[in-house]
Amino acid sequence: MNKEKHALKVAVVTVLTAVVVVFTLVIRIPTTKGYLNLCDVAICFIAFTFGPISAFLAAGLGTAIADLISGYAQWAPISFVVHGIEGLLIALIVRKQPLSKMRILLAAIGCILTVSLGYFVLSALFISTVAVAAAEIPPNMIQAGVGAVFGFALSKAIKRAYPPVSALSW
Image 1 (cartoon, helix red, strand yellow):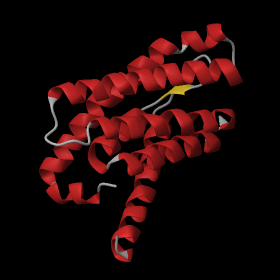
Image 2: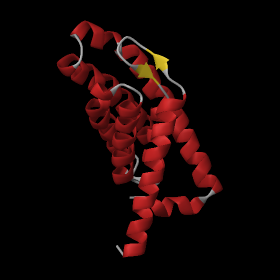
Image 3: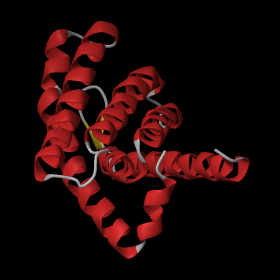
Image 4: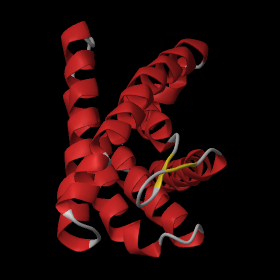
């Protein structure tokens, strides 16, 4: 990869990380131990549009940074792991083209399971009790499901409006 193309991809990931931070912080709905937000819309959009490396980095770093600057620093490592894996997994599932409806559905299910089970397990281990972590599963499933639907729709619209965006996949 030449230096200019590599620099462009690093710049794109940096901007996408900022997009995840903004989507995480703009709308926050408090829950038992944290908050629900729109980060999964951005993460799914990035995974469907920009590929696994971009999705892992932007999702993990963006949500961790949002946690750090919003007073939820204890969640930053968990958010980095859970959302980083979420972005990576979705992007790997939908990487093969042409994209089938089955792979889109599998990506959405992977998104929902990664977020809800990832936060459940890591929260129960490091932050709260199993009962409190279990109470967060339904809202996390809703957040991830909404993210998958709107993230895919946004990706499809952007690719239709600006086809060269696919060349920025990493």
